[in-house]
Length: 67
Image (cartoon, rainbow, N blue to C red; front, side, top):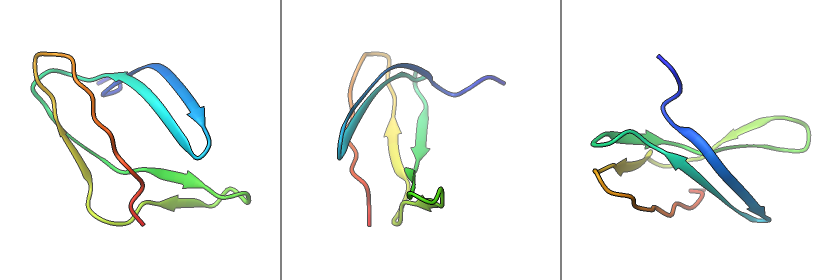
């Protein structure tokens, strides 16, 4: 099975970044953010998973890092 999404565009404007992805239709998608500190240590976002229910039409979603 290939990747769940296809990256189409990423824009970084510290401390915000934006990414366009193509997701499969009619799917429940759960995700979390990770980041790396200056030493390369991976830091997982706390809190519950973010959830997106995709549909048959184009849409958008905005998520923020959960401390």
